[in-house]
Length: 411
Image 1 (spheres, helix red, strand yellow):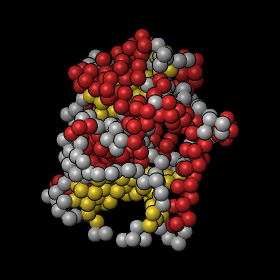
Image 2 (spheres, helix red, strand yellow; image 1 turned 90 degrees about the vertical axis):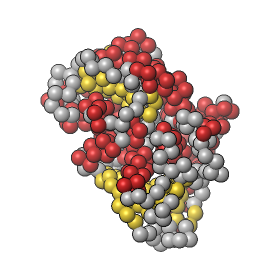
Image 3 (cartoon, one colour; image 1 turned 60 degrees about the vertical axis):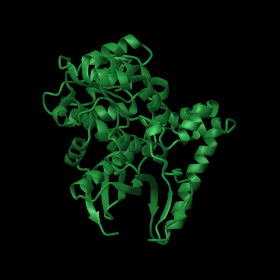
Image 4 (cartoon, one colour; image 1 turned 90 degrees about the horizontal axis):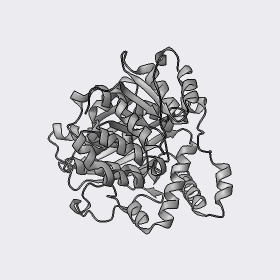
């Protein structure tokens, strides 16, 4: 990647809800001397954001760029070593910036949880980015850093122990508290609308290997449908329910495995669920399942859409400061190996998962891409957090108070 750039990191979409949070994280935690800039459509609003970030952001350059203006995106990509994008829905707005960064050899990171967008990014720009040395790292927030790092760390621990490849891995959401933003709802709405009108998109969303670099090379493990109903596990009595992010996260983890030549395990089966324990466990499992079904059903009905749109957060809005501060998440990966061993990997943090904690994850991903080049995996192209940044990101998150670690399990 080119070294003669004016800036190390630029936050594109800095005036939006998520962009402001990422910029605030960088203002507080970027090492001294990190050259950081803010980008967006309005210089006046960018200046307001910068002025509200405190002394850490004083003097940060402001770059005017618009997702609908390819020339401005090329100029943006040429100015920075890393561009962070919080401008969604990515399916609508994201591809021109990915193209600009891939062609310029500029590293890129975002927050997308959109299968259709990532697939188009892979098909359109993976080869270009690999040639220029750009790391295009999608999904550097709650989608899908915890999932991707958990499986990577379990694999590395099992490998160091000589326990053999992973054969089965289940990510369990043990605790989750936070809010929802209008941007997330807007992304979900657009993807559902696209799938409704495009049979190919529907087939892609149903494919467990939708993000594979080579679909024909994937192993035939039989049906690998995502969990859609509440279930009680006979082994331990735990009730499980669907996890709203599983249809995206599972595809990211499988892409990581394929990009690593199936190092996790050529026959590894992976899934994600919400886990409930205690006397009220079945109530919780059925409630979560019902709520997800209701939201999906309401968004899919055109006649109900105006009512639903009034009830759900509007684009540009998000959870308040108290919700962001008091939120939390705890995810636990139960992984089994061909050698019969089990490992438990925990990824947990305080703060709203989708915004407070995500701002940390995306901010630290950007800093790793900009400053930790010698310690990153030897890779370029359209990547995942595990393959584009790897364990360096786990180290950075631990330094910011996250729990990220793997241990042997007897369960």
